[in-house]
Length: 166
Image (cartoon, rainbow, N blue to C red; front, side, top):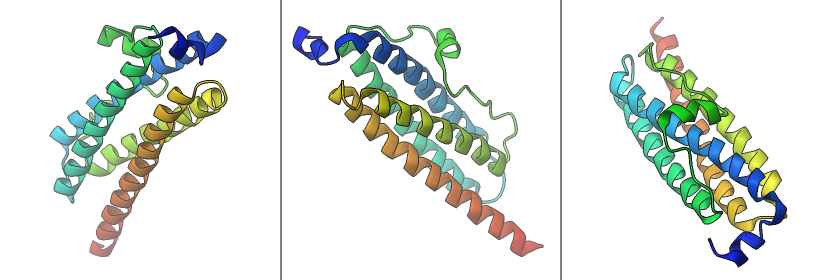
C-alpha cells in the first residue's frame, strides 16, 4: 500500500488489520457453511432454500475478496491456511450436519446476526479514522442485513406452510 493510504489509518493500522483478518476468516467459513448447506439441504421448499444459500455463498466469497484486498492495501497478510480461520473467527462455523431446511436456516441466521455485529463494530472503530475500511465494512454490512432478512422470510414461509398442513 502507498504511504499516504496507510497514513490515513494512522496508529490504528494493526487494530484494523486484526479486525479485517477476523472478518476474512468469518467470510470464508460462512461461504463454506452456505455452500455445503446448499448441497445437503432436504425438506420443504428445498429448491428455494438451495437457491438462497448459493446466492449468499457467492456474496460471502465476494466479501472475502473485499476484505483481502483491504488487508493487503494496509500492508497485512490474510490468514494463509484454512486451519488458521478457526483461530481468527468471530462467528465460528456451524457444520450442516442436520440437512433439514429449517435447521440450516437457523444456523445461517445465527451466522448473519454475528456478522452484523462484527461489521457494525468495525464501522464504529473505523468511522473517523479510516474511510476506506469504513466503506468496505458498510457495503458488507448492508449485504449481511439483507441476508438475515432473506433467511428469516424463508424460515417464516416454511413455518407457515407447515402450520397450515396440521
